[in-house]
Length: 309
Image (tube, rainbow, N blue to C red; front, top):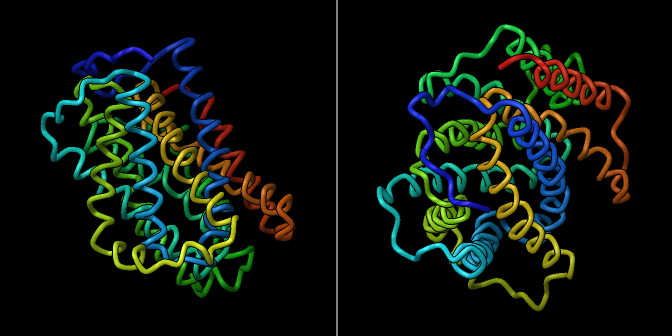
């Protein structure tokens, strides 16, 4: 990976050709890995509270990102300029992660994955004031179609629940985190100063960990690690190495090549991947109405991804 130059003055410009294709492929892999975080995170959430679990995860992620940044890529160890950028971005990510695992204590991975798919529509809304990016009507139509499918999954295909706006506690908690992540995506591009992508990720991780220490340190110190099953260790390792470190690099890479509205459009595939993974893990398969909603979100993605920026 080479050092990136600062983004051009027009932040609303995007890559073309092969670079754009690589951005789409990066986000496809992003969607697969994120789906795994909901299922594996649900396993870990059965044994630990969200606050100490997230702090443990991010301490491990700091180690992973430090090895990548300063060991593999030989990034200078100097403190970054305008460090407040990473404190702000870290705070948004910390809020997203905490609310996701709090939500998993109340609802299923499929439902939280459906709430996650509302992010692209919110991200497109934030992209206008943050980056000056306007969403084309066709892309907006794709976002709305996919969001409708997500809403159907959130309400578990129950028309009466939709009409009465019967939203679960877990879904409401995670929606707050989704708003934070939606703002985080365009801010990555706005706050880019040409730093190495891995160094950027390391400092965002440090910022997130600083926010997670106050609510999580007591619970982490009091945790009886010897009593935790192996599945928790496996889940934390997946979350620290794959979901946090690798997905950040994919998101960072794609954010410089795709507009914010399309960037997290690939999150629309998350419910479908979660449904598949939950079934393979033996946690049961979603009902046909819920599966239909997940397929609608995938259709919205297909419409959005192939339209001009």
